[in-house]
Length: 47
Image 1 (tube, rainbow, N blue to C red):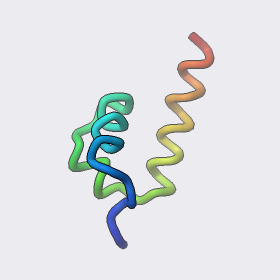
Image 2 (image 1 turned 60 degrees about the horizontal axis):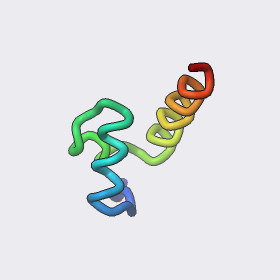
Image 3 (image 1 turned 45 degrees about the vertical axis):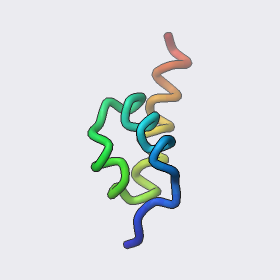
Image 4 (image 1 turned 180 degrees about the vertical axis):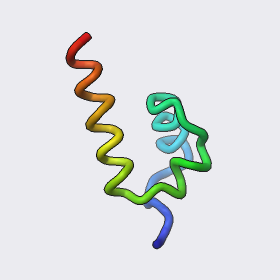
C-alpha cells in the first residue's frame, strides 16, 4: 500500500477535522479515509 498522494497541509487539515493524529491520516488507506470524510460530512449536514 502506498501513502496517500496528498500534501502535508491537506493531511493536517484532515487530521483536525477528523480529530485524528496526522501520522494516522498519512498511513490510512484511501477508501477508509473517504468513508470517514463522508461520515463527518453527514454529521455536519445534520447540525
